[in-house]
Image (cartoon, rainbow, N blue to C red; front, side, top):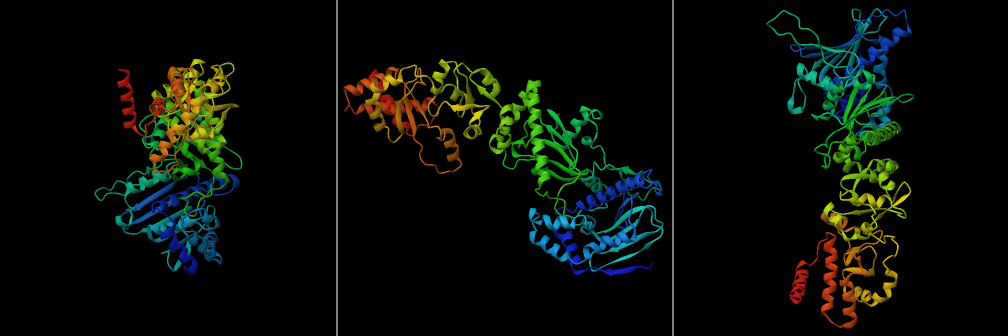
Length: 632
């Protein structure tokens, strides 16, 4: 049959312009698309030979071949797979030219930004039209397709410049499979158009996008002009998809090498995690926990996510949709049998499959850490010291897995100056009659460990968690209990201790002092009351149960947040000589103006004792100097 020239429909010409200029953000992906098509053709041939035993097809050396002709500036991607008949080629071309394309095109153009809005249009285009094939026009002025279906005698040749028309004709001598021949555009670095006749460029693209394709991808380097010896074909892809191999077939060295490849970390991983899901939705995952915190772990522009593959074809780095922010240190690969991608296969659509993968990855990582905690405490200690601060963000970010996160958390406590404790271990050590898991937050261990708020608890030998990470100030307000035991701040509300010190009986004796102090310090505190949380200090400052802590208030103000003044409660130790003396002095000399200065000193001492900042240091120094002078 003679060559037939067919004119593209107007909508098709517009679609091709979108493919070339708008849909893809990186021109290199045209080679990924052609190799993926070739790999699919090889898969289909292998399956067809199983199904049709009479099919006359050579399957002894199935492969993808890339041929470079630097003189003619052509790039050929060839496979010996299933191929296509003339009717199939016409059908593929006709799909984009039939009525209805205009509507899809308009929806695609209106979405434009590659977000989930265009999912409808993209999903209708994908599968009906090999849009990846047309990405060739990003790099080529003219594309020629020569193909012959396995089992048929003759082939077909399709050719187009991607503008107004295409031609189609018989190709009697076409070999089995498909060849796509690109007449390449001139290289233009300013337009980010590399030289695709350069072997190093082809190697780089194949390594990035198609390194784990099942079939060998071969390239014969261009022959130099001073030799007649044909160069040996070079296999460009490693084909070693570790996640697809049985666990006992992969060595620790191979895992370590792959971890370094995906993480750019020169050290070995702390833990390797494998995951495989089968059934209606299949995917495999190979994840790694690093032994050291990445340098950008707490930077605003931190790297996050794992590499995403679909049927071993690289789709994207750092796929944020699959990993929550608090597990941003996890590195590795997820390879799905199928996912909803946008038309360029560069952006993931948010659908049920993505959510299912994400949930299972999170649970697998958390359960792995839990197992490490129970069976390999030294490795767990390394994990927590390096990455625990990030994991604790999940207590706010991921309420669905909050209990699992709490189980793997460790915190410094008053029990040991070095060794942290888990909440489970804390509960096991709780004293008879202790009803709360007690904690205190602050800027440093030294500050909180010496806080007067701990005095009564120390006397009762109650353990207290010492929470000094900035994230601790936030999550303690979101987490009210662990395994049925309430969490309670020692610097907020009532401690709930027995009234062993007789503060109830003392209230009547100190009523006048409390009222007077409340008036003198009204600009600094909301209330003055007696307490049994102190044993050696005269006073301390506490907040109500739902008040913001001073450290958190300071953090917000440092970020430029305007906050109303938060007044706290001044608690007095009725057994302390200073408090008793102030009570007696006020009772004897209620009009003595200098007692107000002593009251302010008492307040400022309580503020300094907890590591707070004085609002008027000069006044405090002057009052203190005056009192010292009198004492001398």
